[in-house]
Image (cartoon, rainbow over all chains, first blue to last red):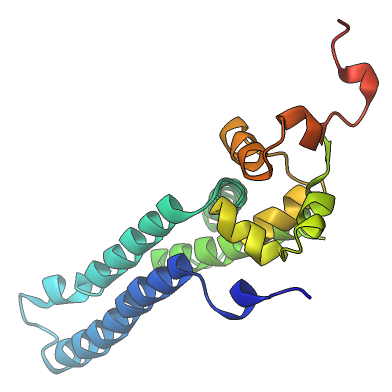
Length: 136
Length: 71
């Protein structure tokens, strides 16, 4: 008879990460909604710049949560993350750099705001591919 | 590297999750070790050896004997 306790219960490390990261993302969503509404009501206010970057603060907490999670990972999980981050970083660099050249010859200019979602998506893809390499 | 982890674990009737908990690693890592897809660091290999009370070379062997240095 095999016991399967850990498979069904989430590990303590995962739980802490989800709480810290989830809390940061919830704070981000709330800050973003409030900031957008207040800016919309006061489009000429001199403090709109400070308010526009306010959602970045909870994003910094999310980054801090991820760095803490890295510290709790075991050696294989860290290796998978290294592969994933390396892929996400490199692929984002190549894609944004390539598109920069395309803009020079007339492609529409895109906002910097797309760099982060692109990087996170590619990091995620890199993580799945790296995980599969070590799976059965 | 090939290893005897799966056999040693089965002898003790532990699940992968049980072994993972004893080694303080994830179940994913235990699975990757057992299938030979990941070779552990030296500290983790010693921890495994200590847990099973066996010398490291009784648990981990090189895939190809030609790779071991001649005595």
